[in-house]
Image 1 (cartoon, rainbow, N blue to C red):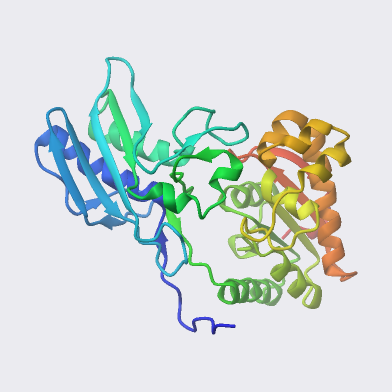
Image 2: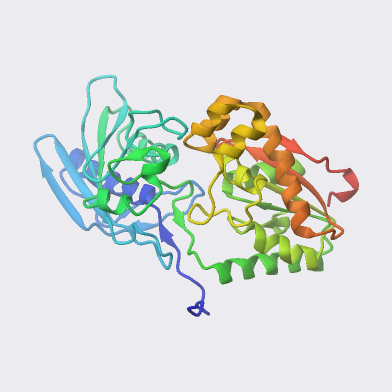
Length: 354
């Protein structure tokens, strides 16, 4: 087993952030005749990174710029890929539209947050790129084409084809930031979070799978920042430590996909190490068609509230099994991509609140 790094790992930038920077640089060339280089953008949480350009080109009515993705110290298969954005004027009244260029896939199956047939450019990157256009060219009709040379070959090493994005990579990211993946470092930070919460006398903490569910759970229960444990995919790392170092109550929150895996007993929720068992889902919900679902989101679109409620209840059961009788009460919260609560299980009495 390789040694884990002992220094703080360097963060990187998502393909969505790189594409947004490339759009801003190319749009400047289209509008003013000069590229922005380096080019700065504002991420969803307000951070303002600056990117050097690795590619610039222009022609009659179009301009394109490229940014080399730096994933920091995360072993991301897209690290080093060139993300190119071409911008051109669109038909009057069309607004901002997106196309997939070389190396960017299309959605081929339901269940993803983008409709079938659309370029595999996720909602938040679309919002970021549209925001750049609105800020720099208000009201302009712009066609944005995103390309990643060699992306089809890289995509073959991901789960894209299985979940319904084919022909290339997806443009992803909800925060714009790639957090470096180190099991030991991440789990150690979770442990320190529990230690801090206990030392401060907190009786209610929360572990969530991502930024959206974290914001929802924090608002739902009125928890302070230091009650929010950065669980991510490491449910097992959190719960095993909590078993030995209990806090009176924990809320576990997440999206339908990761919470479904937790409900089926997975404690490592990373896509490379656990998958939803759709046959089991179909059997549990007595809905045979769910066995053919492509994603948990696709299954939820078919099964609706019954699935979300079952997932919340069974995820709570997984958590309780993992803490093995420790004096910790549990509730679970399942949210959608917008942070809307789909289901909850396990009430939180007021005496647990800080």
